[in-house]
Image (cartoon, rainbow, N blue to C red; front, side, top):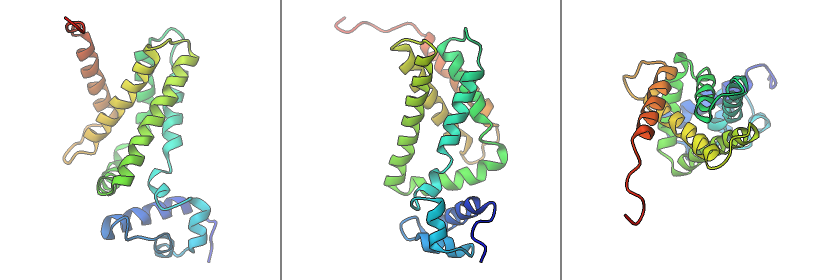
Length: 196
């Protein structure tokens, strides 16, 4: 049995997602995932620390895509322009052919509270990392945190829309629309001050 062939991680991820969707996340073991693609459980654990990580394996690549977009932005970009650049860069991580996979993955996550918590943690880590990058570019507080949290929120809302049944727009188009909506909300004048 060949254990270290190219694409092993991807094969394990695809098999795991199919098994999670068909028989349930809790009911699926790492050994079953490995056996379904002709591998051993030991091989599974060479690639993933546990079965949950099969669903979250690309998280660092997503963070890196956000950071690459910010790094490529002009030096005089505003905090929200940096966030927009990060969103544009990260959109490349979600081509249209990945949509069905993402829909199925989200279905599995939505059925398990622990996985939902892990997904929220992913967005929290993303916001914290973007915030650090903004501060490194000289953006002060609270602007750095507000922009970073806004960027993570825009991504989360856009992603949810992108995987919605019947949705066909590319994620870049959805991200731009959600970001425009956010900017529109921010443009509305402030409400009464506390104590008024």
